[in-house]
Image 1: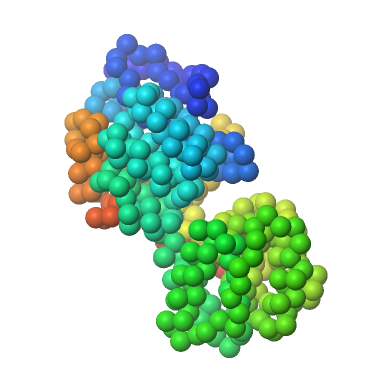
Image 2 (image 1 turned 180 degrees about the vertical axis):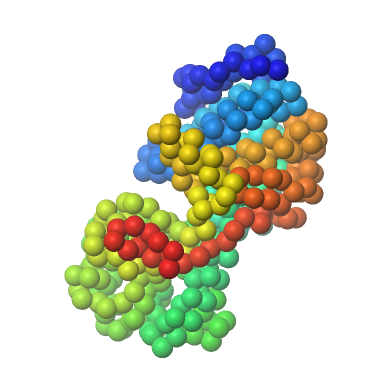
Length: 367
């Protein structure tokens, strides 16, 4: 079967990559933050999905039919994610690679479950996403936050056992959930924090917060939250000459963190999954994306793999219905650019977990 070369066209969501083949199309979608403060992450998802669709169609499509890709912008917003999910139902979509943020993925998953649409998130790490999944068609290709907290907590105890530890969170579900889990880990390992505080996200002055840390003479600060506030807090720590190490989660793997903190951000530690660019199977896709001037980072590759896994499941099942695909995803092993992927009874995958990175010379490096 020969497929016409892809083109990109306007769509009421964000865009569509389509085929002009005379054969029936199979509509699938990606959904994530295509605009707004997290648009760079959405751009990664889009690049990976587009390349996966192009490669799958060049190899014969799914069950002999070409894929057509819908691009949906959820803005990392719950209400918008639900609206987008319903719009995708109207488009006849049978699979969604997304969403990115947990507060979009979780409400959207309820819509997809009711509509019989398989969802694989390439990025959502909140345990609740699969622990309380509304149906058997919800999966993820991202490690869980409780795995992240375990790695961070053990690292703190092993490397800062004699230091006074401060636990901070930004009062968001992500930040508080992560810091609470880290606190539980260090407590279970026999270490108690010296101070635990919540702070308001979106502020631009954290002098009082940092002064409290100084009064406690803390040697290490664990922060559950996002990169804008973390950058300001780290900058204020340096200004107040607080000689303490800042440790945080995967949200600090963003150039915006170092843009805010500047040189003060160097030495900051964070947990983040192993970089898939280092996997042998991603080499060709990375080269293709980079040659085209597209992002070839983590979420481009995990999104590519999500589309791969679904397509292989659909080919093996011989159909695109949710029940058959979900059963296949739950019981088979899939050969993706990330290596062999399998999903457990909750829908969680065996993708590599978290390691410790350090911001050095303005770049994150494995510690």
